[in-house]
Length: 289
Ligand SMILES: Cc1cc2nc3c(=O)[nH]c(=O)nc-3n(C[C@H](O)[C@H](O)[C@H](O)COP(=O)(O)OP(=O)(O)OC[C@H]3O[C@@H](n4cnc5c(N)ncnc54)[C@H](O)[C@@H]3O)c2cc1C
Image (cartoon, rainbow, N blue to C red; front, side):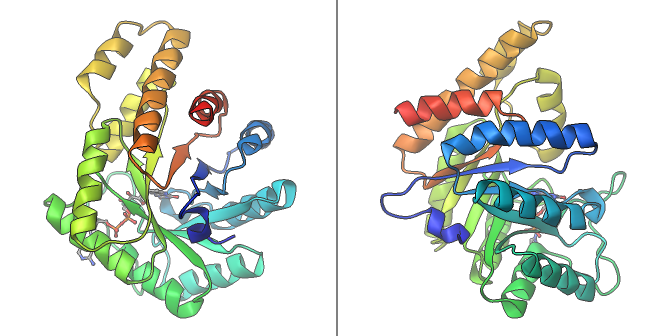
């Protein structure tokens, strides 16, 4: 199944993002969680590509295993980090020959301690170049790209960031998957601006349920997502109570997802962090309508 087939009239595309575990026990836990999440019949499961290009082969192997176990399409994330053009092409050939039909094409983040992204000699600088390379190399691959409702942290202003997003779409991306956000209005404004800019591919909101306040604070400080005062205040009041944090985070995500669904999003992309309980509760609620 190609990414774009997940969306359209009468469809509501669910997708779940996971990352390659670092240990065999992590692998076991991941598949136990996926056993539960695949019951909700996501259109695809996507697997991230490690920082610094560290999981190239593993990402593909996990995608292959997901497709074998569940018969659900897997999307392999892929970044420009640390690879020459030829190495990128070699990986694409490897992924395709392994049976992967969809790629999430990203630039990747600069290595820890660096603020500016520097491509390796003979590498690519921006995700739109990767999209173009994939389209040229293998026009049949489905391509997803990242979008930033609250602006990419490195972009000087929202309009410049939008122009750069459009480059990825014009280069052949099939759908946009957004960075996580907690304020729906920021997503709706972004969607309107995409519409005005002539972006016509599905724009799928990325949702990360808060299950641990400390962890989410770390993640949002890295990706720049706005953390609403109302949510922060509620979580701060239960700093020592993990169960209460989980409940508040799930409740927030359910309300977010309900509103997004009623206001016409083509689907939802869940940053599941290899765990199922929060996403299961959310999916049950939104399926209930
Ligand atoms: C859905 C999703 C999945 C992700 N998965 C992974 C993953 O698996 N592994 C991982 O390491 N990271 C992942 N990331 C994080 C991502 O790599 C970072 O957000 C990264 O900093 C930017 O990637 P990008 O593909 O959006 O880059 P780009 O689209 O290249 O944008 C990066 C910056 O450059 C600017 N820019 C873009 N094109 C141009 C241009 N042609 N000229 C000038 N400026 C330009 C943009 O405005 C932006 O500020 C993911 C992000 C999202 C939203």
